[in-house]
Amino acid sequence: MYVWPVLVLPIGVVQGKDIDHEAVRSTLRTMKNWGTEIVNYHRCRRTNAIVEGRHNRIKAYQRRHYFTRNRKCYKTGILIECNRHRLSGQKSTANF
Image 1 (cartoon, rainbow, N blue to C red):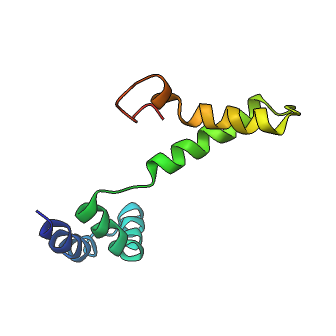
Image 2: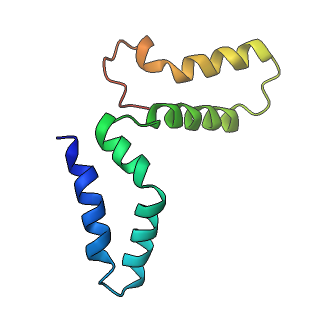
């Protein structure tokens, strides 16, 4: 299961060098530059999607509540916004 990306990535690079197309060359550059990260993703299946989702929620909250003067209310609102799934009793974190 974990051997697949390690074996297939170099094979794809070798086969892709024979194709003369800009999109293929771009993909090969990406695979060369990010090869270790691509293999690690397939090994561990961990991403920073939750962090990115929370960051997006905080930025959206900041746009909606730009003129909030009370710093304590502002910080509390961000905590509620980022942890709404826990407060509502949902088990999935997919709603970020």
